[in-house]
Length: 75
Image (tube, rainbow, N blue to C red):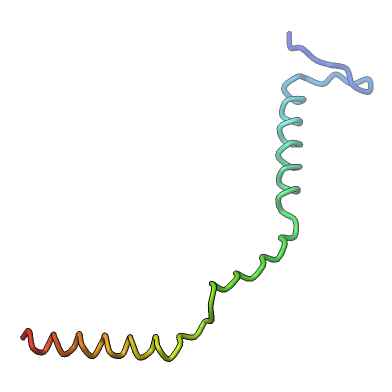
């Protein structure tokens, strides 16, 4: 015969108690994780300015020009 517990005058099988506990735990976990999410803070910019300086632009242009020049000479 199956084991049962008496709750409020009714016999409740252990299987039902176990399933109820699992379902209740899952429901609470779902509700706890499904709330409104907090807004994420904007990422902080890296040190320095976002725009390159004139020196950086000149260096890049010179580098590209020298590279293209060496490519033409190599072919």
